[in-house]
Image (cartoon, rainbow, N blue to C red; front, side, top):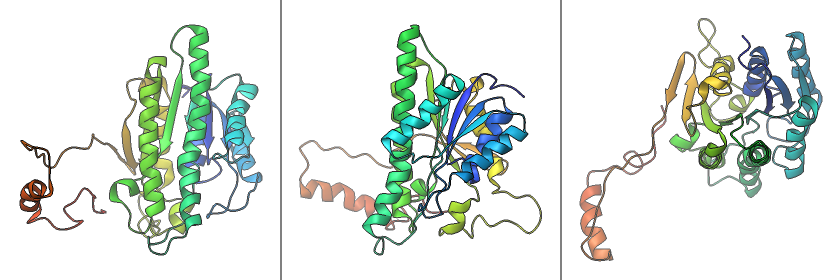
Length: 305
């Protein structure tokens, strides 16, 4: 297939796991790809430029075109250089797929400041920097050309945000931020013809292997591998394509043979007062409402599967 012929994509975290299979999928669909990956270890330390180059070689073997970028997605200048690499090498930018990240799982009472800051930085700021530089490029292009331009933003969040994963307070918070960030970008860029969507994969990667969710995504000894990352790539390919023009601001959960589209959060209860609220009036409506509710289990938090 060649639905992405002539398109240029940047994929972050593209040396392994989801990013790798997504970069390969976009190349199969005809896109030229910037394979961006710092080549860190599972906890985000170190670097290895050979990791991204190996995926470039895989794409070349498929008959595609790719170039490696070894940089920190959460560094303003590295991220800008990543976007510029697409423009300089292939003449433009059409697709940005954000994947880069790592986990440092701990319970809230045992997590260090550095564990929290590092995970928030790579996921939230890492998404922000790429989106920031890509949208500036598209906005300037749209203004110069006097119309809409082609642009696709695909962000990677997690159901850890919905489930408020108990052993991942940093990761859950980061993934919530990605949904909000991407939704904001979707609204800001709609008038330029740019779409922005979020995927929440259920997939086995180095990140899940090293975290508290590893057992959930374990590879079966035989039969269909529900959580193989390859099952996520076709949705990303679709969201990168012209066919997805009517999808922006959506959140998808994808795994195995399933794709779910999430709806907006709703209201569980609404209360109004004739007079400004005081303690007594709040107590008068909320205590009866909460009387038969179970803490946490019947709250806004969605319990894990």
